Image 1 (cartoon, rainbow, N blue to C red):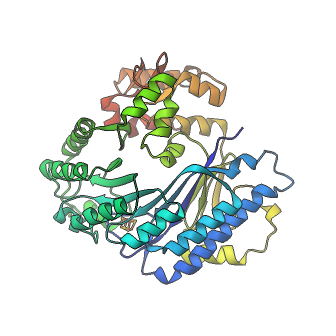
Image 2 (image 1 turned 30 degrees about the horizontal axis):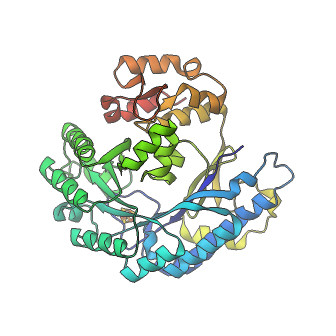
Image 3 (image 1 turned 45 degrees about the vertical axis):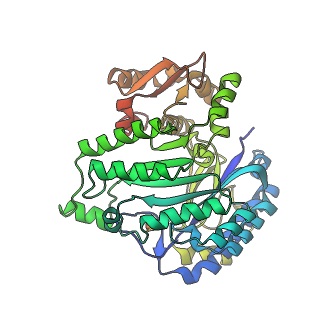
Length: 431
Ligand code: SF4
């Protein structure tokens, strides 16, 4: 039985391409938004038909992929779409899939791009979570990142979202910025906590190859904090957010602690409730638990029916491929579409490796022997004894009885040091 599925929709439009960003996003192509929305709807309809009219060579039961528990509009800047455009996409999803009543439906938005009126309409359509790309509360740091907003826009955006009825907000931050100091990072965190978001993400700046930041850094032109200071910033965030009522459930993500949830969790003795009931991002949990998600849009990556697949990057080509395809639907193995350019059939070993890498990101839930066995029919230590043993020796993993979420169960998870050196841990599970 396939677990419920999620949907990711990529909206690759931005008003300006920021110098540090390597996402598949384009500035100055907003004229293409109406045609792009049409193409998205075509792709949704296409996959919907693949599920209802599977081709002869489809051997698995596809109907379970119809049930959708989360939707995420990422980008890019999804808030550049109008409420009417979101409405038409939602209608297509509801026509083709069974969207659960309590689904989590998120859009990413940049502060300064959403009016109160638009937010009210989005809430009415069914969006119930917003993730604002704040990055910093410091004017100079925002200028360095080439972000168009200031912190007053953030205050305004949060206030408007609350007025529009949103009770689940994420604020995204980046640390380790050029010329950032520990005090400016501490001030950013304080200002963010003062806005009482339900969820906070904090990622270290990564210098991606091919971005202006990557080039400037390789020429020594970017005054970045040294790695020790970046680690100090991360450790400060862990302690500060914990002491302000946020639970760190993933390496870079915190959700507001919720007393009601803890009680419920203690009674049910299950890790699932803490994921389902509190403000953890249920959509991202789908990724971190290695569960299926369908992906629509230019450059979108999906995982379903044993395939990892990705779509063509460019907006124009994506639109053309959805408009002009001639092949019958039976030529496509679900979830591939005319926009797919890469796909890979996962081997059992791939699945196990990805399961370890993604689930270990969940710093509380981690990986259990029972969870691994029920997924793969093999023991965790039968497969990874050597790797786990070495990482425990290095002090990067621990295998312990946990009292917090899973009573009577031992959990393999990252240590405090392991959270700082996550990539070193994950490398061990790559084949
Ligand atoms: S607004 Fe966000 S997605 Fe767009 S270019 Fe800047 S960082 Fe990238």
